[in-house]
Length: 476
Image 1 (cartoon, rainbow, N blue to C red):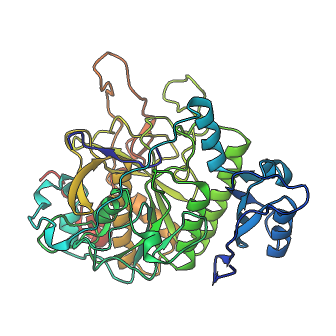
Image 2: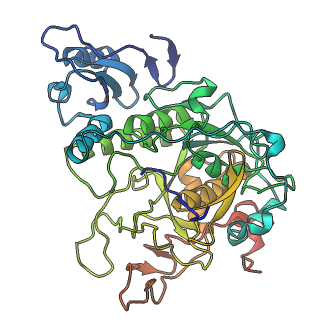
């Protein structure tokens, strides 16, 4: 699953945008020598600087049709019904998540397809519970969010792109915060601004994430870290919970083209179930996403991502089996250089057992919760608790939204340095035997000021708006 939340158990060129010329149409099927089969989507990387006309011509010769080309990063999203398209264009350039899933399905169960999820009913604002739930928000107290709101709740000039499964436009805690003009669906790899393309259809995940960032401070329901900022729904997770590489690239490029200051990515790219899988196809995905992140950062957008719930070490240079080392796994987009990677802690301020970690990868930590005490936030129709690094990341994004509001001229790298410097340091735990079997469940490398479990420490909302206020004890 690409969603990084753990539920509480019980409970045709038609559009011209900065990101490229978008064309619609099926894969090339009538070309001489082209095979015929199921039309699949591919992400294709070209040499940097490749002209659009050149890229499109190469795709056509390989029996494909270009959906969109992002000239800034020389990445195309392509459809093709030719089973040999990948080999024609180059296996070191093309990857199809759809093809990978079909191959896996044929190998395990060639008859029964994966069932679709139930569609969410539309939210009736009048039926959303209006009780004040802020007493349940232990997570906000942990990062000093309530104290921060006494100073500033953020600026409406700040727009955060929530790259996720969609945001409920009818939820009363999010209606005023939602930036519909900057919202888009990216499931095809090309931005679609129609409301039906970016609204949630089967998943509560994106609405939950958005509420952590910007739910209204109105005395009803929950309150977000930065209720004064706006959020844009950028849908990159489909109805089966998949976040394909082309959707993630589209989301990052769209956010940059709309000059969003921040994005939140509470997912990792599919189709792999583990972020440790390697190979040429993984290299294509890494390159495409790395280029998109690099470009968006240069355009002024800072990207925040969840570390994943796989409980694996993400330290890139680790030697397998050495104490304190990671596995060398790579979580995308969290592990990319310009991305703020966030781990999760429970209400006890200890790394959650599910949270991935890694010295030099994790930048900061934030509340994600554990079973029995998850994070309350907005969902279509009301409110619910969810646990995961998916919940930790938007806390950090909210803090950065406050920082951006108070320092509107600051660029991504300056914001990141400030976030790190203001974080509340957290030492490695003396003992990390969560199961009580006498064996450490993970090894924390580093020191109090910077380590593999918590990075620079706990994100601090109060420091973002009043850096001279000191560090009050969040437990008080």
